[in-house]
Image: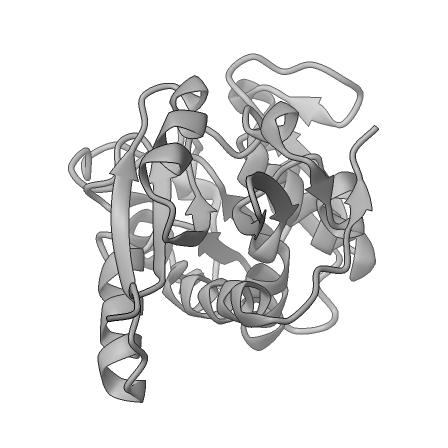
Length: 258
């Protein structure tokens, strides 16, 4: 009997993720003979052993905290992933005894589609909360859309990164605020980025990459002030479908990592 192709998600922790549910339902709905599992990896150094243990693993998604840490383990990168400097989707190519890992960034694809459905075209300034792998994909898309951005971090570094104490001064003239941090994600649902939410108005658009819970404290605080809000569930669906296309394609449009 043929072995069912296996796909999955690596990261730590994974209790908040809907990826397994999404793909399991997709496989059942579309009659696809495949399986999707969660592989909780505290350290990215455990990845080679995971791949050896699962010869039927064809590809996997990558989430916090491995989107940047995985780069040295990859054999190829798509041009977009190389530019962004982070990967959230890996296709495994097996040729005899050789295994190659090809990295992509479908966060960018998923975010762009969802953002364009959410904000008016006249919005041209954004604050990006966080500076990890997801933030890099967000900033890449904002650049392609001509939206000026500033990142906000607890430990700011660089000319386009400020502290949360400085963020309040930019709020009146910055309508789009994007949370890429895990703050507010289940089970820590009572946390949120440290912003002066009382300054928000109906002219603000709050986008949270988190989707569990459906309305994070970040979004609820903005909604209370009349701001428009959007969670990351649509983005998840978009990036998941982009990953599926990559995993099931007959070729990989990649470049070799130097």
